[in-house]
Image 1 (tube, protein in one colour):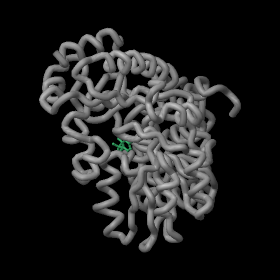
Image 2 (cartoon, protein in one colour):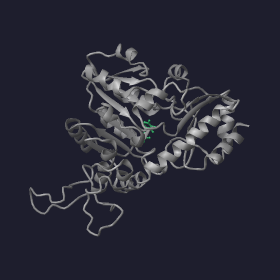
Image 3 (cartoon, rainbow, N blue to C red):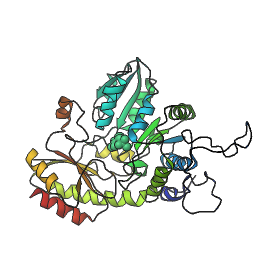
Image 4 (cartoon, rainbow, N blue to C red):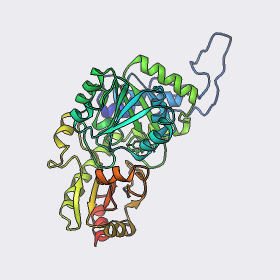
Length: 381
Ligand SMILES: *Cc1c(COP(=O)(O)O)cnc(C)c1O
C-alpha cells in the first residue's frame, strides 16, 4: 500500500476480515472455531483460532503494513513472541546478543535457551568490530535492541545486518522502544523484528501482547508453524484493543517525543541528576547513528541521580507519574530497573552497564509536559 504511515495506522490491513454490516470499527470475531461447509472446502479461510482468527489477522496485516514486513504474528505477550522466534534455533547454535537488553530476554536466555543447548554470547554491539570477534560458524543470529533497554545504547542496524549476513546469520531487532513510527529495521536489512506490543503499539497500559515480524516467506512460514504449534497467540478482544491503540500511534509518538525532549533538557539542569540517557539529545553518544536510521528518538529517558536515596525518594514522592513497570502508554510511568525490569541481569553486568541503585527509567506519556516537570521537581526536592 502506498498510503502514508499516518493513514495506514487508521486504514492499514483493513481489507482482510469480512464485514457484512459495514461497521467502521473492526468486528471482534470472538469464536474459537469456524464452520466448514463440505470436506476439502474451507470458504472463510479460517478453521480454528489458535491458527488464525479474522480480528487477529486484521491486526497482523496492520503491523506488517507499518513495519514493511512480509508477515507478522500477534502473540499474547512480547516474551511469547521472543520465545517463538527462538524456536528457530537448535542445540549447538549460538546467538550473539547486545549486552544491554530487556531483563526478561536475559532470563529467557539463561533459564530456557541454555537448557536447550543454545549458547548466548553478549557483546556491546555499539562497537560491531568487537562483536564480530565473538562470531563463530555456530552463530545463527545477532539479536539487538536499539535504543536498548534501559541504557539507550544505539546499534547501527545496517552494519549489524551486513555483519550477520556475512556470517550466514539472521539479524533480529527488538523495535519496541521506537515503534514502527520512528524505525523500520527490515528496510535497513533486518530479517526479523520483534515488538512488545504492550508498549507503544497498544499504547494505553491496558493490553499485554507481542509481535514477531518476518522479512521473507521462508521465515514467515516457519514462524506460522511454530505459533500454531506452541499456541501463545493473541485473543480476538485483545487484538481489537491493539488495533484501536494503533489508530493513534502517529499522534501519540509525536507528542510523547516532543514532551520527552523538554523533560530530558530539564533533567540535565537539575543538580541532583548526574546523567541523562536520551538519544534525542545531540550530545548523546548514539545521536548520530540513531538519526541515520530512525525518524525520531522516541519518549524513553533513563537518568541517574546522585544516590540511591534520591532515587527512592523520587519514586516515593511522584504523584502524577506512576512508579510502575512497563512503558509506552498514555500514562507516564517511572521504573527502577535494578529492582524491577532488570533483576535477572547478573549483578556484574548491571554494574558494568550502569544499571545501579541511582538509575531510573521514565516513559513519558501524554500528560502536559509542564505538569510532568512539576511532579519530577517536587519529587527531587
Ligand atoms: C516489555 C519488553 C519486552 C517484553 O514484552 P512483554 O509484552 O512484557 O512480554 C521485550 N522487549 C522490550 C524492549 C520490552 O520493553
